[in-house]
Image (cartoon, rainbow, N blue to C red; front, side):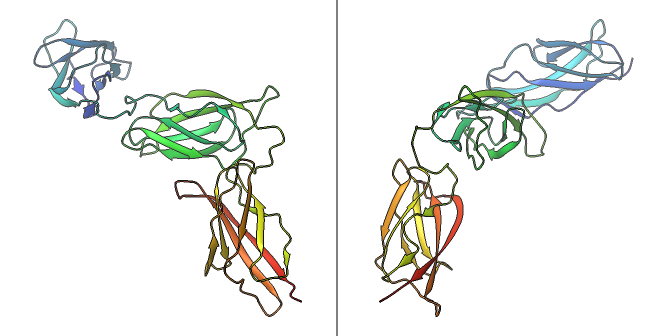
Length: 291
């Protein structure tokens, strides 16, 4: 009879995980996978026509160090013992193989919401419009937490909903979970003039000013922080916070730098309350018309 090979399983597993075992033997043989020391059968399977087999344990295992073996039913020929470790789950990460979830509210008030969720530790979460394009990818931390600020608008149905789909990949770029489907209810406040999340701020006040320290007004996404610079980043004029409808204003307390052609270039970018940039830049040219 051909020898039995058991491949190395994932070396560390959380207690609620049911380990996945695989190996090779003669084609179309019925096998038992067992715990080496106790002989406890963890799974039964049949090798395919090429002799390959893959089976998940029928039981989860408590924390500890283990080794497994396998044998063809009706024989006493065992595979060499293969070790693996079960560790206590110390974080909120999902078990290995789990599809990512969304933990942020599924009712959103913008077409470009900040999504948050859970996944397995260190997994890469790909977020798609259902049956559509990729919004982006986020890497879960060791606790399984991930977040993704959308920079493209959700596609919204006539009923005001938007379906997204999520899947987990490992660091080698291979999928390691099934899909999760999530339906978002899009409730953009009627009449709100806030810009979509991810939009660069704009200036709505006149771009012709008569003083070197004008009052600037503009629009941005709701509740974000607008950084206003002299173009080139030489001077930060201020950091006003947009209100819930996206309005912001800033009274300059430093003089604009004015070119020979009586213009002054400023640049704006949006940051979130955690201090991270959430938009591209907007460039605005002010014409300085002094008496």
